Length: 138
Image (cartoon, rainbow, N blue to C red; front, top):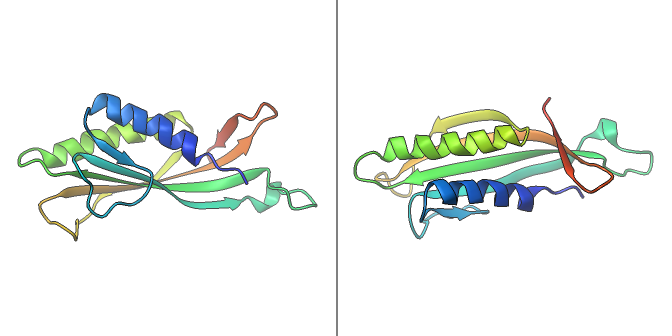
C-alpha cells in the first residue's frame, strides 16, 4: 500500500511548529486539544487509482485525501491566527503537489469560544524506483 501520510505529516507539522512555536499538531482528530493554536492533519481516504493497477492488482498510484482542522482560542485575533496557520498549511500542501478542495470556517460545536477552520486536500501519489513519492494533480 502506498501511504505518504507520515512523511506529509512531518513536513507540514514541522512548518507549523516553526512558524507558530508552542502550537499543538496532531495526526489524528482530537476533540479537545491540550493547547492552542492546534492543527489536526488526518488522512481521510487512500484508494488505488484503478486505471494504473496491473493485471495482478498491484497499485501503482493512490488517490489520497487529507483533512485539516485549525483551532485558535485567542481572546482577540483568533480568526486571523487560524487564517495565518491555514495559509501556511495550504502553502505546504501546494508545494507538495496537492490540490485544495475546500477551506471554510466551521462552527466548533464543542466550544463556541474556539475559532475553527476546515480544509481538504487531494493528490494522486505514486512511488518511483528509488522509493520517493511523486504527487500528481488531476
